[in-house]
Image (cartoon, rainbow, N blue to C red; front, side, top):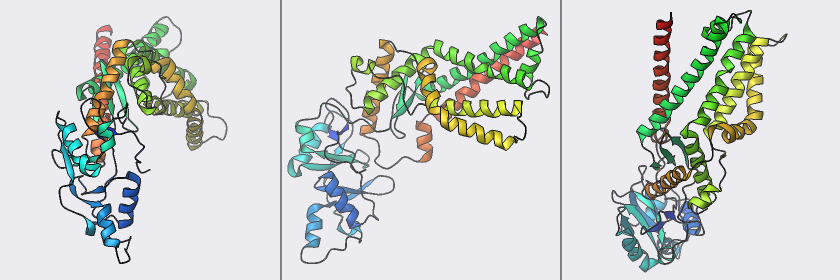
Length: 396
């Protein structure tokens, strides 16, 4: 959907100018696309950028009017032919003089194209926004993030704010260690049960695959890790920061002011939370393994996977919010809420000067924190596993 002049401005609060994220033209764009953008944006001109987001020039309403005067204008022709190279921009660097530069640029034509210090297109600034700014700054759409041990990380896939990469790695390490400890706690319980003569639970816990005669018991031992892990997550400070992260993202999505009293009223449940994906995976694995262990007559292994996938699709939207509410988040304290609000303000500041061009897949993957988290999880699991084998060697 094209941005319209009624959308909230793009930028950060304070002395920084407010800039709207109007999409640019590419060198291959048609004149029809230029007309559509000018109509939607209500601007004097729209930018033309290359594939890296660098500003090349602009196409203005006056240039289109001059080209159409006295002859039929081919709207399917390239807009590049009407591009003007002259400097119709205001340059911003994130410094205190940006507001004055943008105000001066908008004074003559009521709107001006904004580029950053490196010449990348940022958006379009309008004179009314500079004279009487909206109460709320633009909130980047679709923001996501994660809780870290001592803060909150937020990102749009290109811009980012809040905690550092090391904090994201620490989150992964903490989750990995919690997962390893949960597995170890179940193993300890199984060992005690077996030592007291109550079945072969520890042997089943050590087994990577279900023995033929004890599929159900093996499944119970392995499944016991999940509730232990969830209760452990609930007890960690990470759950409070996770709740704060969801509250501040909900406030941003709903256009609410990022004040601690308002953010506190927001829900701890969010539809874009990764807990929902974990719920779907958990339902699929549990259903598939349970059906494989019970093995109803005539049910093939592929059928178990299909049934598990169907159940995951049907139930994850219900299980995910329940897991968020009762296990993966809890009500944050004031310090955790302030950390989330600081991260949101940091994200808005960084998105203010983020390149207009879409980020590469690698950049998006890195900004979403997937490599850092996975590296941390591997480290945490490996550390707990090393301790386990050391203790096991001492006991034996």
